[in-house]
Length: 368
Image 1 (cartoon, one colour):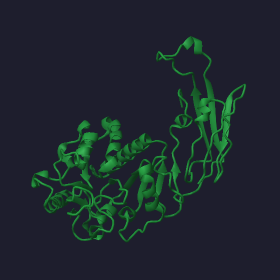
Image 2 (cartoon, helix red, strand yellow; image 1 turned 90 degrees about the horizontal axis):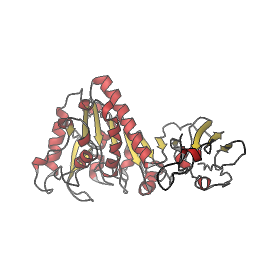
Image 3 (spheres, helix red, strand yellow; image 1 turned 30 degrees about the horizontal axis):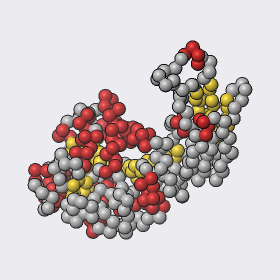
Image 4 (cartoon, one colour; image 1 turned 135 degrees about the vertical axis):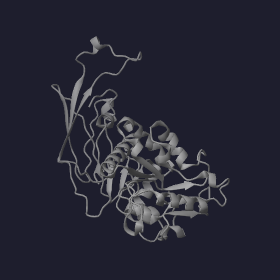
């Protein structure tokens, strides 16, 4: 790892600082202002940036209590700070290591998810005219709102969205993964309803006994789609362009739970029924692990302190084959972290993204 502290040194002619970062080094902290006192932040992981990084920040006076600035009185009082990081230690990603990227805030993770999803969609649509994406539920759903910014630049009629697992409840139930994603994103974008491939909630009236017939019907629906919409790979398995995955504190993904018999199922079924979920409701449907691993791109988001310990376990010391941590069985996954989500990592190679450096410095008025 390395930790980086930025020190601001006032100068009569200008305000310039140089910060040098290298492995296991923490630099002196010299505070001359409240902004400087907020600047020290800790980064964990290995940087893969270039060896020189420079940000220019325009620092100005705070707004008055009336919500505006007196332009005449404050004229000439703004100063430009140049933050320059030299000899930034750069470590190439080891062969076979997962791609992990660390962002400063959860909002930047949400933006990154939107950008990579839009990029995957453009690539797939250019190649075959359609884009097939699978979504998880849980905390990931809240991050989908970043896709609204892509609303006017997206060919939504060529998107096809599926759910990697679903609870056997009505689609308008608060527990429904489809319902959560619809409220967070899809009700606000012009995607045709028939392109949102939800389970058929007319097949059941209660959760009891619902999973078997729901899984069978969803499996049949997906297999009926043309290969232009959902291509096939080895063994006839579907190739999704992108899966946005979450993981639980126990390391489960989809509705594949630790040491459950379904984790290692490898047969002709794409969709599996689960009748004894350790989390309510007990009956659900889920993608099989072979279907997950056949996808072109699998992306995990680990945001917040609650994800940090299990993320470390999945990436650094979990068994990859025995089913005790299903998330560790996902092959060639990409990981997006915020600072809190990556805070427990010790040996994982992490790329750092530095957008929002003015925020890093804690400046109230800034312009990058």
